[in-house]
Image 1: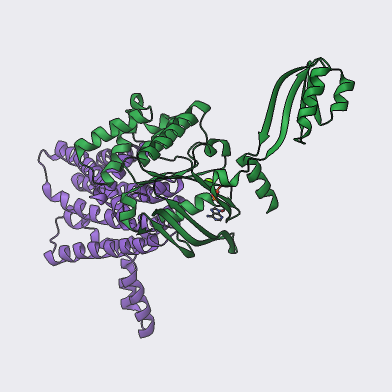
Image 2: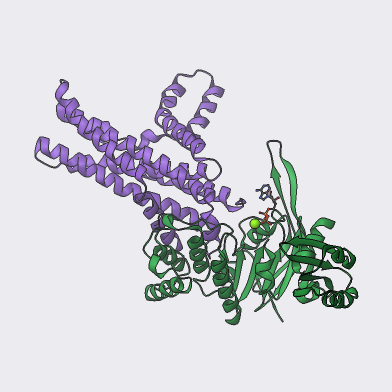
Length: 305
Length: 254
Ligand SMILES: Nc1ncnc2c1ncn2[C@@H]1O[C@H](COP(=O)(O)OP(=O)(O)O)[C@@H](O)[C@H]1O
Ligand SMILES: [Mg+2]
């Protein structure tokens, strides 16, 4: 499988302060995104995700390293012809209306007038903004800006889309809609590279992820490979049991009203506790085995470094 | 094509900016005030109207060029709109030239509007249109192109306030530097004379674009002076634009 995006030992540092002091942001990033997959670039705030994306786009120049987009060197306009980008916090020309805005970018790709008009209309429909076509962006809400930003990234029917925190700042419905669009992009055969610090949003749609902490990739691969299937603990919610009996059951206990939540860490004990509750006349409301989530891995790794 | 697209967008931005209309309004006030001034003073009234009118057009044009020119690139970087723009297939120099021509187009239209007001005022006074008066305005426009390129250059690496100050200094120095020429002739030391000569060639001489007095007082102008001024304007503007592109080429947008 050929790589849609390839980064090798990318280094970047900034000079900051009055007396310039070198601050290294990226310490040798290497990754490779396969054509047609959704790749999650995960990491806490300040890890260097945006910095990496800016390097890919040639907005900042790496100190060292190699970047290839769709087989072209990263600064070539050929790569940009086939690339879409959604910036982190969508900042756009607020004096343009939504359709003028899309028309402007379409012109930069040299798209013909009639095609520009149909493209603009279709994209506004795709992101649910067809009613806002003639409203200036100044009057757009945060969510609407995110959507118009998304449509701008798709104006050239790109082969690869770079999305910087595409779901942040959206309400749950908005997040679901954008997620659906991202999945649709993949179905259309496009490659998606998205960064995020919110994991729940990402883990259900990404094929592969890389986890970035303080400018270094500490883990990358398929999500199923990163997450073990091991059961961490079992949560049982019961009612109708005397407090004394509960103490015998052991585990972590917290009570709310007449219901009690038990956290059993030892998998082998679950069976016997189950029987015990039944014999003492208690009622079991739910029993959930908890497996590891990406978040657990994430928090664990960030803590380690 | 891409330069034109950016230029048209810049033009759109400029004409949707209230500051521009404020300046246009004040320039109109000044031009009309020239009429009032001419009533209050003795002497050739037409000449006073022409003098003050042309000076107003030149001054307000320069203010427009400086205020808008310094904001142009800075705003793109500050509001981070440049991220999206440069992620499209466009070279950085195309972006910069687009900005330049967009503003030049805006200034052309503003100058035209001011000229219409000015000509109308003159017409009501003399009842005939004097087309010759447009000639110094054309040279004011050339000067504004140069000032725009300078404002653009400064705004590539500093904030609007600083670059406005720099550009304003450029404007003022540019209008005073011809004094150096007379100074040079009076300096006895050859070495000092060489230093000042070098300084004079490097410094802008915006008086090259000033044909106001000659036209107002109907003095003859040899044609090779026009030619020199036009070439001077094109060369200097081109030089400053190239400088701006070089500054812009490798800078990080953070
Ligand atoms: N221009 C800059 N100068 C100095 N430090 C910067 C600059 N830009 C970003 N940084 C630092 O680089 C780090 C990574 O930033 P960024 O890539 O935006 O992180 P992320 O997108 O993962 O949240 C942060 O610690 C930030 O403070
Ligand atoms: Mg970021």
